Amino acid sequence: MKKITFVGGGSMAEALISGILENEFVSRKNVWVTNHSNQERLESLKDRYSINGSYNLNELFEGTDIVILAMKPKDASAAIDKIRAYLTEEMLVVSVLAGVSINTIEMLSGKQLAIARAMPNTSAAVGKSATAIAVNDRVTENQLEMVRKLFETVGLATFVEEGQLDAVTGLSGSGPAYIYYLIEAMENSAVEIGLEKQIAQELIVQTLIGAAEMVKNSSKPPEQLRREVTSPGGTTEAGMRILEESGVKQAFISCIKTASAQSKKMGDALCSQLKVH
Ligand SMILES: NC(=O)c1ccc[n+]([C@@H]2O[C@H](COP(=O)([O-])OP(=O)(O)OC[C@H]3O[C@@H](n4cnc5c(N)ncnc54)[C@H](OP(=O)(O)O)[C@@H]3O)[C@@H](O)[C@H]2O)c1
Image 1 (cartoon, helix red, strand yellow):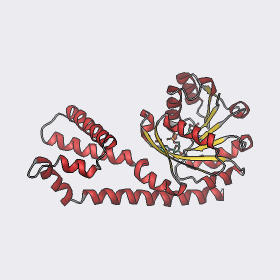
Image 2 (image 1 turned 45 degrees about the vertical axis):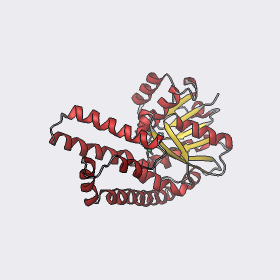
Image 3 (image 1 turned 90 degrees about the vertical axis):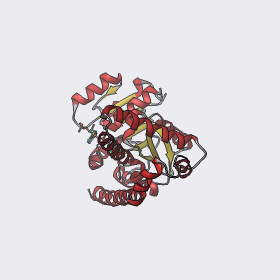
Image 4 (image 1 turned 135 degrees about the horizontal axis):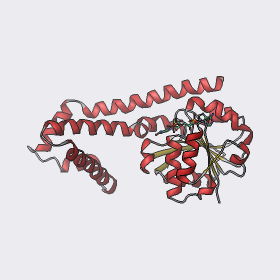
């Protein structure tokens, strides 16, 4: 039976803990978590999920198969420094730290480790994350399967080259915020055209879910699906004309490109900072 140790017990760790327990990826007694110093939080995680919490590094790491690095990127150096002696070549180290490269983790650990770097998004909290994972060449076939299954407990998981993770960050990492923004705009308009906010929100959310399911399940590309609901001279066409004239599609493209570029810029700066430490 696999043992998993979380280093960091914040919101991303909790989403993963909840997902792996719900999906019986490991048993509760094989999940261990530690944090920096917030004992109250550690106790509450232990109680809520009936898992193990500890500050004793021996018991945390003894026989562990998967170590999950789930602290803020700025704390990576101190955290890895603390646990370095307990990391072994047999373990799979999984990092969810935004912007921290596999090479930086290798340098900070000073060891030849099997490392997987994942970019989940906040929807992990409801089991609907879109997670992209990159690995180094020390990750075995077994570990590859293990890490895919691990992230599938909180949604979809797919493998990419590490160089593509900035694009992933701009697209699906920040993606939930773009969709919330769209919902905000739809809610505002709904109130202006006379709908109650509560009813409008239900209609908007269901519309998004329905459209997403259509794209997922249909063999037709989204452009064709859109054209099929846009009859000449109709209401959709009248509305779409405004979006076209306002350059909304181009704005989304620029938004995602800019977010990806920012991810690369911040990641590069962070990694040089961490390596200097
Ligand atoms: N939240 C998301 O949706 C999301 C999405 C993608 C990626 N991520 C990544 O996930 C990571 C965690 O984010 P989060 O939102 O879960 O952060 P968070 O809620 O702030 O939690 C951070 C955790 O790390 C612990 N920690 C700090 N220094 C430590 C150390 N030296 N040793 C052990 N534990 C230490 C903290 O412990 P104390 O409380 O005791 O200080 C806390 O439990 C980040 O690197 C972020 O980039 C998050």
